Image (cartoon, rainbow, N blue to C red; front, top):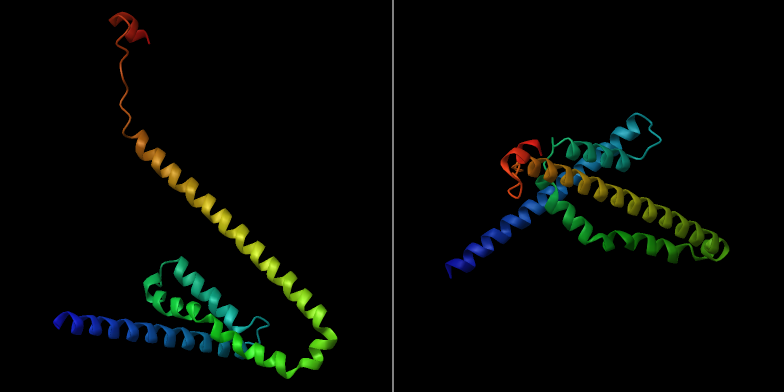
Length: 161
């Protein structure tokens, strides 16, 4: 019985932390949108916010654990954010009948560019990390190498070798 109560308490803490992170991410996005509007930026506030968040995470000023649960939930339920475009498709059916092929073609091309760019970036990042790990491994293994003496040669020839 105590185990069930403890599990429920942990689950409640997990949900509260997830909700807090989602709320903070939304407030951050809202603040960046206000900032973009105030400075009349041609870049949307969401893009500015993602850039700032990326810089904070990359510089380790913001630990990954502080946004992990909230971002995982948002990504997991991302399908819910595509419902409004589906409603727009139904609402503007006449527009789609006239420009549908052009719109779908441009969406496919844009999506392909994004996918290729992401794949290229991830591939380069993995190669960079692999080289970095290999260099680190080689540096640590060089420190452990002990020169061996050749035992098949007489002692005078060993010194010369």
